Length: 110
Length: 486
Image (cartoon, each protein chain N blue to C red):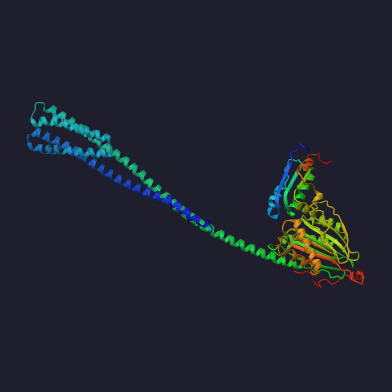
């Protein structure tokens, strides 16, 4: 696995709560390409426990598959929610896409 | 009104619109066919009869002429004359009927017969009538017989043609009858189809209606059952009386989400560890309803039961996580900690839970640190233990995310919460938790369960040591007084 593996971009937007549970569950399934995963939440302003649980499971799966994963956050409210959830430490979080992509393109496990 | 019940009517109208023209066309066709076949039958009868008469006239003529030739009696010429007069009329009538029937063979044979008859009249009958005893009498007789035989053969041809036509007519009739049968069958099938369709629609409607009623009844009874159990659970677990201590004051409130059955996944617990210390836990199981409530009961048992042996908040959360993970339970967030009334110190750890609020006398309330992953999801977790050295009169406010995320704007939620806490702290009301809840939700609707627990150290009293006021008693009888308000 290397930078040749295609980037898996997971993108969600808006307010994510239990009403969008199925959509969230589907979106947070990584593809099978084995490449790094960018979770683009730059347009998300709210996320409830459905998303928190989904993100943690996603990180678990990515760890198991030795896939790099980065979280792109654009809204201070979401940053705060992820702090509550302790995800700030569980994920490598970026607020701009370029840095996230640079991080994901780097060789893993270093 | 729903458009669906009208559908059978539309279908029926459509089918009728198809059936009626078919039946009308079939009826008109049958009527026309019957009329035409009656007409043809009439013509056939006429043709057969006239063909026979034609032949008879020819024979009458021949017989009359022969009789005259033998006897010289002019009386024998009477049938000859009559037949000679009548035969052309019959021929004309037969010709019309044959043409009407479209029998070209017959028409040709008739023309031949008429021509032969004319030839006979001219070359046989006329010479004999003129000279009854001619020299070539025998030759004339022979010629006459041949010509008459020719006419006989022509008439036979005509009769054959008519018979053939009759056979064709019979075949047509059979086919027509088949067609009539088909039309009738089609009509019967269509009308039967409509009947069946309407009946099945009726049955389905009835069945659907009955099923809806059944499902509604089931839902209602399930809801009622859930609500009964929920009410019981809520009473049993949430409204557990808080300890009453001199050194530490508690207040708590729990409001389930309005639209759900009256129980959620939020809870709070306060457990006296010893004379100076109480363990507190506020938690939130993802979801609402009975399943969340059962998971909640389990989670709080896991957290509290091990506290007596080792109340260290971070290890409590680690053990709770392991237990919940083993049960494949729902995600749980919690804050747990120890309030030490002798040292005026709070020690706590959070697991995916929003931060505690601390308000100290004469200061604005502030959000404490938080972090640490939720319980029940990941096998390896670690939690940071935070220690806050505080002072007499300080109040710690613990809550679940419903108190913060009512607008889905968590930063605004934090400000609103801090304002509410500040106001309540200034007013100094006994039921701080209820007052905070009221301040937040006086103008807002809670979309989620809301639990709030406040833990306050007794204020410093002039002339008396705080410690003396704070300690002294343990094992206060639970249930003596309820600080919860609803």
